[in-house]
Structure formats: structure tokens, C-alpha cells
Image 1: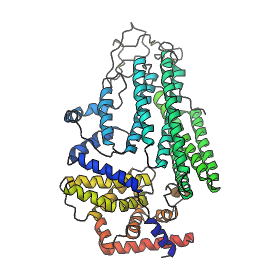
Image 2 (image 1 turned 90 degrees about the vertical axis):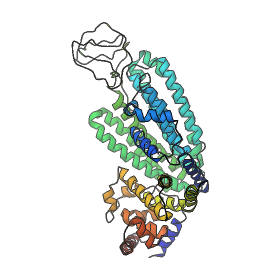
Image 3 (image 1 turned 90 degrees about the horizontal axis):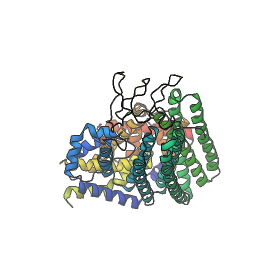
Image 4 (image 1 turned 180 degrees about the horizontal axis):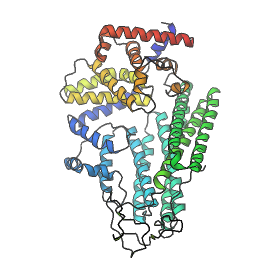
Length: 398
Length: 167
């Protein structure tokens, strides 16, 4: 075998964890052992049951001790726990979603980094809830305040945790990803507000200001983390830039495939807009590669990160467009009957998730005050004209 | 601290770097390698807590890590497990770009990436992890002869790749 292979192998043997990181992970393991002396079956149950109901982005690390009553509640709740995942503020299962499901997930994450990721997920989740409620004209002042408080708490926690990361690359990655997500959600909220107008727009404004404030904070943190990355030794910065290039190109390829798959549903105009955003990312990669070749590794790293942000943003907006446009209908237990003359309006109770609308013309419809169920001249439904509020439109244009 | 706990933490002190390194060269992702390493020790603890008597800790840890790595590949959208476990594949520039650069450069990762995963696993265990053939055979569950032959064939492939790249 050539001498070079031996040299490469000898270099490879030097790959190891940083001492501080090794110590941190040892501490995590030690804590896990202490609080998890033998409850393997229950841990496996939770891991399967609760984890399977959430998006698998975050690693399940460790289990904290759980009050026995809560444990029993989880065992008994079974399907309720699963159904609660889609609950929105004001709905019957929402307390299970936040009070049990999310708490359990929080207990399952022990490392600082896992907690930071989970806080970012929860902050984003609150915004998505606000978007869904706003799209359905259900974002009241009380609910908006509750969401705002919860969102800020998680967002502040993300930043505080990132400041304690040992690895600035991971700090830069998470802060960039979170910043991009917040910017996208701010745009989505404003688009919903503009589309709906009226009370919904009034409630969205203060929330959007809060999101902007948190975005500015995390943006500052991102700058600080990227500064740490680029101030490392040149070979490390080069490696970071090369790694970021790979990540950006992977992400671009992934989002291209995603948009291709969605193009029929999106329509040609929205697809063109989405692809224009991807083009921006491609151009940033080209610029970054030029910097990489020129030895400007720090600048290359930033450009590749911006490329990743651009496609992440495109994907979030497309997902929101699909989720929220046409989701104006309130399926929380209300019976919505198109093409039926407007009945005497009654105030509907809080709905139960999973209720399906019926088409029986003899059923007394339960409607929101002010909803007009008459069809417009084009034959399409206009039951979402609540206090003059229009249909949701998410704009993908740059 | 009780005895099983002592045993596992002592194993951590001794093997955490090696397991991390092994995972790193298998999945080519530093963050993921950390996660896999940590999960290896976690799962091992679960079995110790259940009463499992682990006599050969190093081999056991490698076996657990290997299973987790296979699970990781199965979850990956872009790669086919079958493809990885075949004789090897001709990388396109996209295949190469899909591997993140490590802390210290691309050369070794590029060379290894040209092998199928089962060959890569053997080369990493034999030359980077410095495991004897006998132990590799126990970890993988094949005879020493089979392992020796496979390592030899994998080395020949690497030599061929090296010559093609004029290393």
C-alpha cells in the first residue's frame, strides 16, 4: 500500500472529540444513568408513542424522571395524546399538546444543543398555530397574547442556549436556521394579515412586531457565532466552508425535488416564483465557490450559509402556501354547508377535533356570526367573508 | 457509583473517541457521529440495566454502533442501503458533494467513500480503529477467514482507486 495511504490513516487516527465536548457528553451520559436505572420498557414505550407523533428532527436523548400520575395519564391517554398534536389554542386537546406531549419531549432532551433545537421547534410551532388560527379568522386578542408570550419564552431560550455551545459551527447553523424560519413566518403572518384584513390583521400586527424583535436578536447571535467560525485557524475555516458548501448543495437539491413534486398543486405562477428563489441560492453558491477558490474561506462560508437560508425560506413559504391557502374553513367541529341560504346565526361552541361536515340540507348549520354562506356569482363558496376578511394568499415572489 | 455504572463510564473514557471516530468515517458527518456515539453508550446502558453481562465491551460497543449506523442509512432519503452494501459505486460529483468535509480534509473520506459500506466498515475497523481480524470477525459475526479475504479485496480496490487518482 502506498505511503500516502498510511499517512492518511495515521491522520485519521487523530480524529477525536474535543476534550471539553467529551466531558460534556460524559456528564450527559452519567446523568442519564442516574435517572434511568432500569425503566427501559417505559422509556421504549415513550420513545415509540410520543416520538412517533412528532417530527423526527430532534434527537431523543435522555429521560428525566416523570411524576407517576403523569406517566399513568400518558399510558391512558393513548389516542388523545396522538390527536392532540394538531390541536390549536382554544381547542379541547391543546392542553395535552403543550402540557403533556411537549413536556415529555422536553424531558427526553438533555443536552444543551438538543434543548436549543427543541426550543426553536416550539417557538416555530407557536407561530404556525397563530398562522392557522389567523387563516381561519380565529386569532383573538387573548390567544394572540398567549402565543406571543410562549413564543418569546422559547425564542429567548434558543439564543441563551446557543451562547453556551462549544462548537461555533453548530451555533452558527442553528442560529441561521432559526433566523430564516422566523423571517419566513413573519412574512407568512403579514401575508395572512393583508389577505384577511379586519380583526385578523389587527391581531397579527403586534405578533409580527414581536417576531421581528426576536429575529433581530437571533440575527445578532448568528453574526457572533459566524465570527467565531471564521476566526478559527485557516484549515478549520476551510473545512467549515467546504462542509457548508456540501450542506447548501444538498439542501438546494432537496428543495428542487420538493418543488418539482408540488408544482401541479402550486400552479405555474407560484412554481416560477419558487424556482426564482432557488436560482438566488444557486447564484450564491457560485459566488461562494469563487471565494473558496480564492482562499477567502470566511466569506465563502457566509455565502454558502445564505444559499442554504434562501432555499430553506423557499421551502417554508411553499409549505405554508399549501397548508394555509384553502384552509380558511374552520373544521373544528363546525358544520359548514355551502350553497345553503344564510340561517339565523348562533355562536358555535369550541369544536372537537375530527368532526366532519355533513351535506344534509335539513341539518341546522352551526355558523360563525356574520358568515355568509351564499355562493358568489362564480359558484364558489364565500363563507369565509368574516367581517370583510378575504381568503388567505401567501406570496412567493422575491 | 455502583459497579455496572462504573463499568460503562470507564468504557466511555476508554472507547468514546474510537466509537466516535468509527461513526465519523462511516457517516461522514461530525454532528451525526456524536449522536451515534452517544446513542451507542445509551443503548449499551439499557442492556446493562436489564442485567446483560457484557464480557467484551469493545466488541459489543462496535456491534451496537454498527446497528445504529445501518439504521441511520436506512433513514437517509438520498441513499439506498442496497446500493451502499454492494461492491461499491462510481461516485458522481454529486455523490462526493453529499459527504461533508471533516475536521481535517477530504482525502481519506473521498478514498473511503468509493467503497461500499461493508468494505468501508472493514477498512475503518482494521486500519483506523486498529482492531485485530479476530475481533472484527466477532463483531461482524463472520469467520476470520472470510473477514481476512474481504479486507484484502477492499485494500485492492483502494489501491486501484489511489492509482486512478495518482495519489
